[in-house]
Length: 352
Image 1 (cartoon, one colour):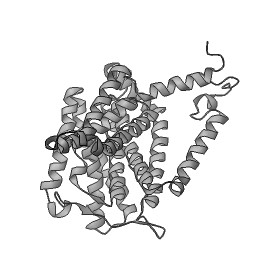
Image 2 (cartoon, helix red, strand yellow):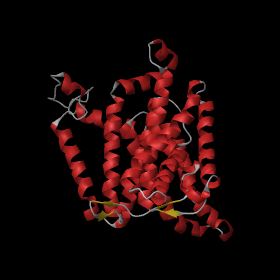
Image 3 (cartoon, one colour):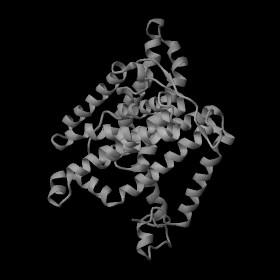
Image 4 (cartoon, rainbow, N blue to C red):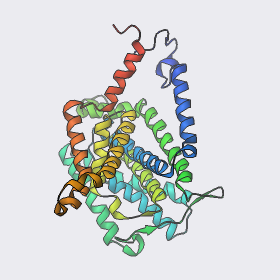
């Protein structure tokens, strides 16, 4: 691994450290400080957008652990988010639990559901595993709508009571921002360290060649289920944060459309990379917001008969185009460009 000129790893601790140089520590602390003061200097619209990006990062990081690191395809991330969100809502609205008590229960309920739908990974993989997780994407919303709609609300939008933190009501996007950012940073920290642990290396071995990993003594079924569990935990946490961000939940917020978008995020960002998940989420969410912003003015040039459909279809069209271009021209994602930039900095001024 290249280091900037004059920087040497003279101990094992320095060699395995994530943040290795004074410049990196400065950048990290500056970034955390910027996140800390962001709501004080930006409008509510910007803060709301950053909140959406933050909770999307939590879900995308979990999916990247499953798909990018372990090689198990999932098309049910949106459904697992719904499990966390609806568990949180029912515990708060029907049992009267506080948000902070219902949050971990909602997260672990999603993890348990992920374990159940991860069981087919023992026998199937690839396309067939994708179909098994796709079943979760259809079964879970169906159960929400049709099984005990008196508890789930069915197709209705259900509000949740506004939580508080040490007497501060989390009723504004500025207050919610700090909750979402705390869990986002914590998820990134844990995922980055998981990647370097024994579990993370086992995940990568299974992704590269599960037969060889099993011969080496890795219990592939155990680690596959663990990967599904971690992915679903992140999805459940993102679902709970979604409920907090919106103040309400509706089953239409957790469709197959969202699951495909999360899969596209980690492909665009870079499979198997924690920074790649962040880059992918930022790129796709900003692309989505751009489509919403330019959609109305752009479609004024089209006939009235197709104007509404063009406005609704612009965002999926741009998403599909971006995904196609990345798969063809940059299959390793945005993180590959980031690595090239870092290597240039590390080698400078001796580029040869």
